[in-house]
Amino acid sequence: MSTLSVALNSAAPILPAGESASLSPAEAKRQTFQRETNALVSAFHREQLRLSNVDWVVTLFLIGVHVGALAALVPAFFSWSGLAICLVMHWVTCSIGICLGFHRYLAHKSMKLKAPAEFITMMCGCLSGEGSPLTWAATHRLHHQKSDQEGDPHSPIREDGWWAHIMWLFPKRTTEVSRILMRRYVPELVDRPIMQFFEKTFALWLWGGGLVLLAAGWATGGWQLGVSWLVWGMCVRMVAAYHSTWFVNSATHLWGYRNYDTRDQSRNLWWVAILAYGEGWHNNHHAHPAVAPAGHKWWEVDVTWWSIRLLRAIGQAYDVKDKLPQGRGADETDMAEIARPETAAA
Image (cartoon, rainbow, N blue to C red; front, side, top):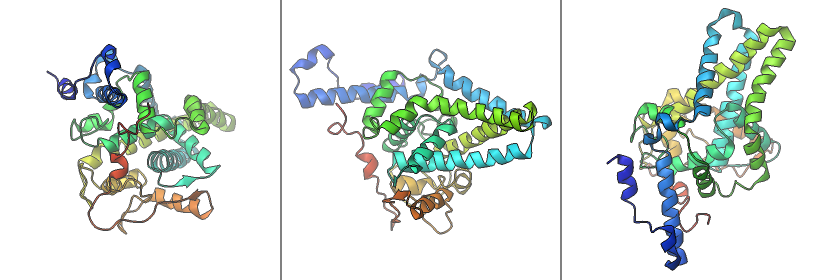
């Protein structure tokens, strides 16, 4: 019997739908909750990675971006302006879009943002190509709740480093699983108009960004410069941002030191913190997920925290949770309380 089958069969027995009419409302809700939990565990299990269940849209896009990044090795496609666009867009999409916007703002509510800061951070996150805001935030909350346990979408401890780093992205997941994920893990976000706007336009921002780079470069200096801006500003930038983000999922659960005694194997890893704008101080973050600064020691540099401080200084960020904890104890209650049967959406 597979490990997935063992995990699902170990749950409390679920009555067939036709027999649930005699159940109390509380028991019926518990049964539904357990069925949905089993569906989530199954959807994010590595046994889903098989040829018949590959998400070819995601897979071919990631392959295409990596192949496109190799074009940067062609001397004709190098330009100093392309390199500059790559560096600026890497910071804009990875630090502002993902680290600040999708991660600390949406997933953990470490601060509140006013307009236009909220719109700009969501736009930057969509340009990163790491998924829509709701999908990203919901999956990340699931990771925190199940970190290094059965049901964690990307645990290198339970599976392996390559699974946590990239391979968990390739299996196809159903619309029903997405619905469960959204309603259970981001219920306060799903009906917000701005979130619905970016959910519906995510692909337009992603592909539109590439077309703008190509067209702008072409108009500025001909087709060769246009291709240079596309290769460096989209492909190289995205591949670098992808892997710096994915190292947080893989490397920081395998190597590094621990400031706090968390229930998982999260670690602080300096070189990931450099590549991922502060996100590499992962043990700090898993111990106190809602705290806005990820660096808790004076030497733990957190570039994203500098941006949050700037937004607060100009009045675009408020209610920033910046009090650093004392001692080695972990406060993981905000993640532990997510999506309990009594609080899950009906």
